[in-house]
Length: 150
Image (cartoon, rainbow, N blue to C red; front, side, top):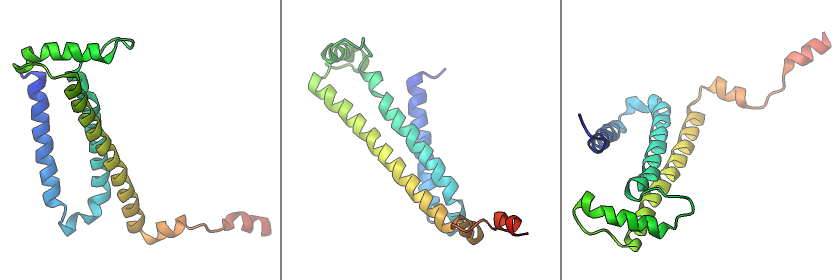
């Protein structure tokens, strides 16, 4: 049976493979009509990836009591480092740098998600059938006028 860590690494490999396939097929003209659905799924994937970066620090620095100083949590994390990684634990500053980098990666993915959603909205707007697009233009509702007149 695979450990959680092995499954985590395997999922990352599967994600990379899928992303490469997506990138390779992105220039094919035949996929143009499928872009809105694909962009929606890519956006959901970016959401999930940002959550992975948001949750990753919990595997590095133990969760503590809300009133526990962060330096104590960093101290406990550093104490477990030799057992986990076979080397001396990092300083508080290095741990803070690592956590900041993980947060920054997650924030970048959240920005990418918003950009993906905007691109998808524009694409849907520009590719919607004309009658549907025309229906979105504000037109008076003539049904109430016809019943009032006749």
